[in-house]
Length: 311
Image 1 (tube, one colour):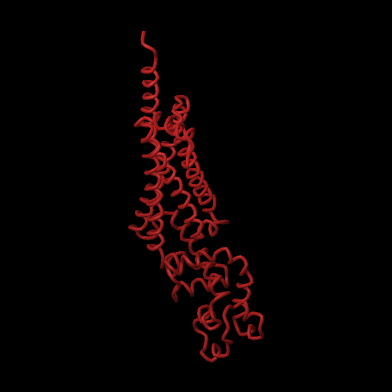
Image 2 (cartoon, helix red, strand yellow):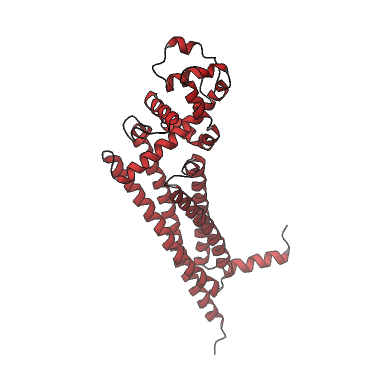
């Protein structure tokens, strides 16, 4: 049971709240939720594995910058939401003024985020509707996608695929007699430790799998690939050649990107759209909060003038 002093304090706070202040609290709660959505979005990107997979590529700095900005905006939104709630309750004019200025800056920042997300979404749509390559940038993207996809497949072949499946993928013209002598084990890493590893060509596969530790960080991409664009004979043979030689004979025809282009771009469009909607929600909330903060300051000023002793 609350004490009488606590009840009086709560009652005093409730009386001090103006209509604008009450609305401001509700909108700030929505602002906190929007910040949490942005942080959740960052976690979704991390769970997809693409941020780790892009390390060491031409897109590393872009990926790091994007995830860092989203995290900072999410944390900032939640912090400003809490500050706004305190400001609405305290009804201090200086606090509300400073808060309004900060929220104007936040509105601009989230507006830039929304504009960037929509621009990225439109760019992906243009690429999807155009013949490959839409421009030179897509050539670079295709090259990076093929490498990342195949490293993820390398993780699968070296650790999870059967010896027969791997050998057929790497050597599609192999005789059935040769394949029949392969042991029924999973993972080429295990097979390479056995005498059968001396079978013609298999040593090349074993050399590729010696980089299995390098493939480990692509395990999430493998999950993404299996859900969105599973391996087939075309992607399997191209990746097998790439992993065995380290060279790419093409970047589109018969490649993972050639097989997964529309699927991947659809995912990019979906991610961009989700980010744009979340950013737009935050930007609108910030703009509404600025208006409410101004009304709350005016209401506070008016309330003080009303309480002055009349001459």
